[in-house]
Image (tube, rainbow over all chains, first blue to last red; front, side, top):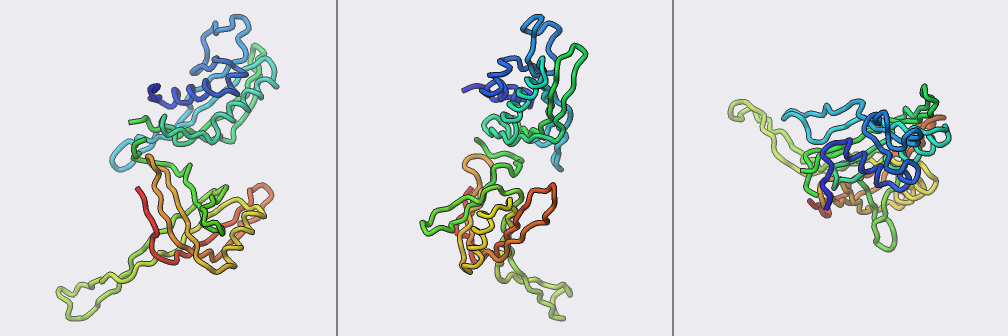
Length: 139
Length: 143
């Protein structure tokens, strides 16, 4: 049995890498934060997606920090066309919105209402969204 | 899966045994649910000759009170719960709350007394708030 994830980033990455819809569009190109300057794919690294934590982790009660924490996790999808970026973003939403996997510490994951899109300086298209992730490391 | 120290409500369910086949059927699309709470009543004893002049309270009867289920409005959902209300009969409600494995479950008898449609607004999902009066003792409760 695989080791359960120890942090929300690992949990999210495992989910995205295992999701057929995401894998069909981005393969294994799921990176924490930004990829390196020379991501796999060389001169043509697209499409890929990145995830990073933008907030949360402040849960507490009178006994101290709670094991269950709520995190805001941002996922941005990069592609050469807006249509492709949107397609990956939709697959990410299908993978994460309403996802729960208590055996791996995920009590729930929900899409926020901030889905957006932009064009980067190198011309690649980005579509992204924040997800509210409730995660408690498995004891 | 061990019990957690904290849980969110996602994954909680309500089933109603409302069919002729005595089968529990889930209430779909619940957005908010206030579970039932049995409350033990008390009466005050206020005799002026009580020791120390302190009011004494004596336990009396337990009241199951009421609970509410807020779920998405559909014609089918409204018709289902209106049928329960107009039947004027107690049905068993099975409530499941997530924690560990198996989840916490309790079953209570209740009478549907109201199906109140929520405020109808242009950009708000329509809801029904069903109110159930608990009509007896807890049927089953599980860890």
